Length: 274
Image (cartoon, rainbow, N blue to C red; front, side, top):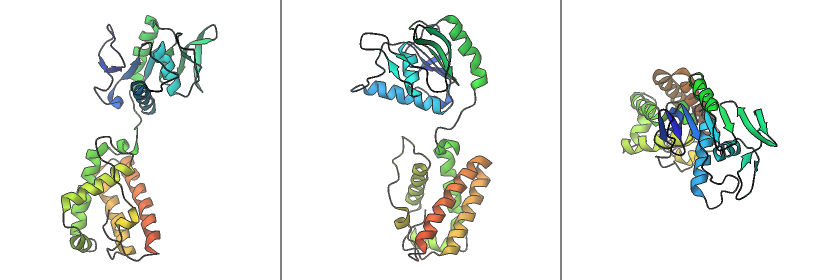
C-alpha cells in the first residue's frame, strides 16, 4: 500500500495520507501540487504534511517526491529551499544525498537513502518504475518512538497488568499495594499513562503529568522493595515481550529506580508506586 499526499490516477494501490499509520505503508508519494515549501506561515496543513514526511523518513518509509513534493522532501531532510513566489521551488541536495542529474543549477534527480526526488513537476515513468522496483528491498521499518519499539500501547498495557497481578501476590510487595491502592483500574490506567509518556507518548492518550518522586512518597518502602520491584518488572517484561523490547523496558525501569533510590536517601518513604 502506497500513501499519497494528493490523488494519483494510474498508480497501483494508493491511498490518501492519514488513512493508515505511516509505518505500515510500503511508501509515501509526494506529487507536485504547487503548494508552498519555504514559507509555511499560516499554513497549518502544509506544516502537518511536512511533519508526516519527517515521520515517514524517521521510520524508514521510502518517500518519492516530485516538483514541490521533491522540495518538501528536501526540506524534511534539512535542505535549503530555493525559488520565489510564482516560481517552482526546489531543494538543494540534502546532506549526504547523491545527485544523479542536474538541470542547470537545479539538482534534478537526487536520492538519500530511501528518499527519491525529481525536481520537475512531471515524473518520468522510469523514475516511477525504479521506485516501485526498490520497494520490496525497503520493507523493514524503524520504530518511530520507544513506545513503538515495545509494541505500542497494547503490549505495554499487557506488561503493566501482568506485573501488578504478580506484585499483588508477592509476599514483600503485595502488602504495600494492598495498603495504598483502593481503585485498581484507575491505578493501572495511571501507570500505563506514565509509561506511555515515558516512552514517547501516544496521540490518542492524555500524557501523564506528575512528579516521579512525589508520586512515591509515603509508602514506607525501602531499598529491598525497590529491588524486588525491578526484578519482578524485568521478569514480567521478558516473559511477555521479545528480548529487544524487554531490554528497553528494563533499562528504563532501572533508570527510574536509580532516581527513586537517590530520592530515598534523602527521604525514607514513598507513597504510591508506579
